[in-house]
Picture 1 (cartoon, helix red, strand yellow):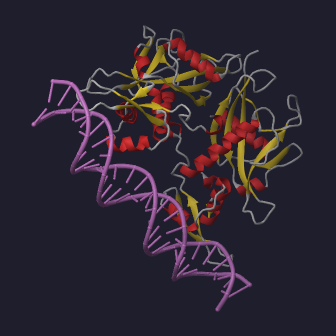
Picture 2: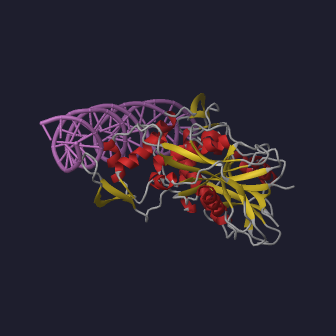
Picture 3: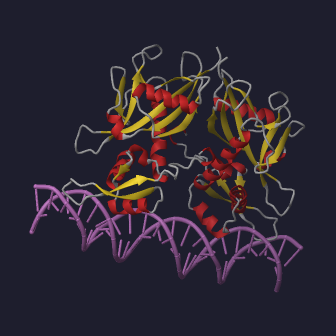
Length: 223
Length: 223
DNA sequence: CCAAAAGTGTTGAGGGTACACCCATGA
DNA sequence: TCATGGGTGTACCCTCAACACTTTTGG
């Protein structure tokens, strides 16, 4: 038979919360399986690797096909290859994780077979996908602390409060606004614009943007 | 046709230096290719993935077959899958990196088709293996700073000076012995024994051992 | 006693946290 | 003028780098 090679992606976005007191919910889109094994169960978007296409390209394409979205950040997570992870032959899955923008994720396709779930309230998924998501969550939370990837959840420009909310939602902590500001401003990756947002009934916050000459995460020689 | 799946491993050990002023050299064993493509070039040990065997098991087995050694540490590095990385069909390589003990690495098999090279003086290798080693080196150096994996280069017991030399050789820095001592002693992963090493013409150093109930590196849910 | 490495003590700089305080806007 | 979040100042603590100093061995 041989070994089947598959590509899957854990897609993260911050979506509006039903409870308006919450600032948003870290969410993941899943697809319902229509075939055995695990027919009817929810699973990560993905499919067989394409012989003529790079692995990351396949991940981005599958991502687009299920959500109609393009990722703001995409990174390989891990190659899962235990012998017993699928009982329809041996499958090695190269899994990626992606961040998409909140504004776009709202209009993302949803339907009978595609649905967004809160990242830490998932149902029982097909294969070893619960374990995969758990690992992706751990990586996301870790990387948020020492890299500048939080911007990928937001649009072109954003306020520091919005950026802080991303950290608070993902890392499940509450951060001091004053210290958060200094921490971000000391980094060259985020720069102030001269625009502000008026309309709130308080002092208009300044908009910041991400400096695209700085790379989001340090992945060493892989860039 | 389809996609071929391979497993390779970047093996690190600290071997005795020719210059006795050096404490040791970070080295990698390579195998000479006997077939096209890249016949005659040096390359990473590895081979086709085995359908009945886990990926890490395959990596450890290939490691043993080329060096007669067992790894003290083994971790997945990355899945390399660019479409143009082999021009004998599409090959996806799941690459692991491993640490082996210095004492054992000295007796490691070496021959016409297996040879150890200093990690940062490699010849031009087959495929994209130079880039793979570069990434593995980056990961090793990074992980040494925030994990307790340096012990894997040493034996059951070791002196703090030996452990410091590992850091100095791998990270290419010189470290203050006093501060290094405190840093290690504050970590629960390394514990003092009541033995000392006599014989040197100076105060006999205490031996330490690694606490096996603590895991070397934090790989999150993957353990 | 001397050289050399093991091991201890101490100080000062820098980064992060907590928190007091002022600023600018809409209602 | 008040409520609300934006934004600044500052004191304290803790970690870490630098380096002086003491200890224990072999020669």
